[in-house]
Length: 576
View 1 (spheres, rainbow, N blue to C red):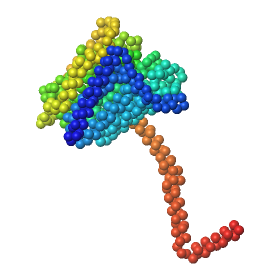
View 2: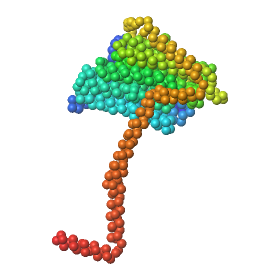
View 3: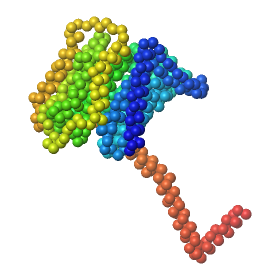
View 4: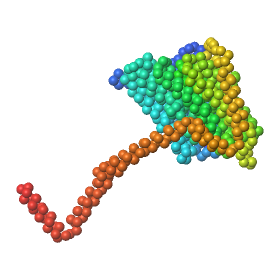
């Protein structure tokens, strides 16, 4: 046990120091405007060079710094959340493997080494989702793995197409990506892979299902690692996608994802799934702003979102841990008087998520919205942006109403406190990031101010929509809350909007039904049909027949011996 504690603390300290080292080097590279491209040539096969490549620039080092910092906080937090788990050492190893895969993906401009990190994320995420071994976790893990597998196949096809160009380093072939000679297909495959990993429509069903994993994993996965891998890949590929039809399609799908997730979160009662749908909504924001051509803005929002979303998941984990593993927000309430520190951090993360002025989310989200309003977008995308922004604040204040205020609805004998320093300490560190992170990142990533010219209406639109959403989210729930399942009166509409537009059903039942039906047909024709007739059962029957024949021949029957003798004599006469 002592060895494990030392390993746990040493892993956490190493990640903290590595995070600090990466951040200092990133600031250094921004100030001097330099980057390092390291390449090891392994072998050349048919004019295609197989090389191992690393790229170390301000972007990769800054992202690595955030990933390792949040991972260290998650490891510290896990010491309190997972203390009763018999397999906590396996959990720590899996988290470290997850971080290693993400790091490998971040520093790779080579499609093959990207695939190693990409597939590593998919494999470890599957193992973490099924960590609690039950049927629900198994189903969620399979949905997660198979959805991400589509992206893996797209990356493999992209590797094959790039190999026909002479190499796998996509930095050298960006001018071909929009060409008609197969380059446009590579861009489409990369966008498809990014959409599966970042759970854009129609691959959104796996992200809320992945909440079957332990909460510390959710804090890591849904803030800076797995779901942001697709956004980061497109940030790297952004120059190659400029002006393509793929970019326009991505804008529409990401805007719909943003709206759909915000709508679904307002009808959800599972605390972790609400926060997961919030992540999905913010991923839609990142993808949409990236498809408008502002890769640095998408990266800025990715980093600031990572800070307050990891904090929000940690606060949710502390609430669930104290509520004895209840996740339904309807049985919570009045936590502000019993968990003041957790409530403070949770409100901080919620306000940052809503884009409240001068918190981390404000600097990135408000800038994204203003740039989107200045861009040449149509009225449909504009309306989706406004509705998604209002719905974000609406479900956030609904969450506050049900969990932090109101009456305590659980059993009276439960003891709910903030006493676990292992869980509150990382929340305080991430809370500092949620307060100061946005301003610090804006100074680093955008040292020169940009001119944004907007009318007063558009300038105040984001704030106005947020205020309306907050009032609706709190007052409306305050008026209708009676715990009498009033949603059953409009079940069809509530079911459609609250189930992500039936995407979980469409992602599972139709695909599995057709696959199982086809497999059943083939198993009857092949495995239970001709394969059995000429295979195992057929051979068995023929051997049994011949065995019966030879058994009769060995029964010392005089008639059989005479018959065999006559056949032998006739055979000799015929041959000779």
